[in-house]
Length: 137
Image 1 (cartoon, helix red, strand yellow):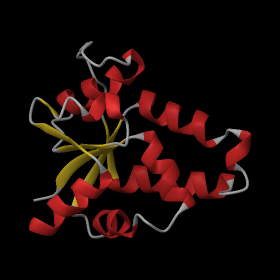
Image 2 (cartoon, rainbow, N blue to C red):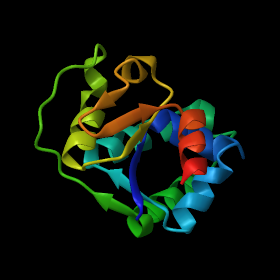
Image 3 (tube, rainbow, N blue to C red):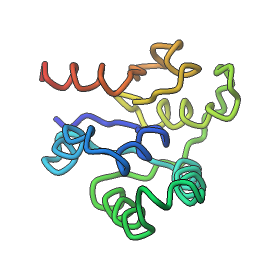
């Protein structure tokens, strides 16, 4: 059964910049994972990806291709929860998405989220920890 995952914006940006995330790419294409996203997560990714200093690393076309991947391999969730437990309030939307989307994993590099370790049934992991989990399956 496919695992439902949320990938934080910082990792999507890294995904576009480096080749380090090939495992994630393989898991997406093989339908081993389903990407959960919301209008807020898409908006955040769009805003960050359009920052001028990223233009030398990836193009608008690269961003649009990733949006197409979200549409094909993802599910849009409309969170209704209103959790306010992250010490960085602007990250609470990811926790709400995780709970309402019944995500298996929230993958992030953000220490404010990582220190929570889990929310509901969602494990909050670094990308490296996620790779290790996927090797077990």
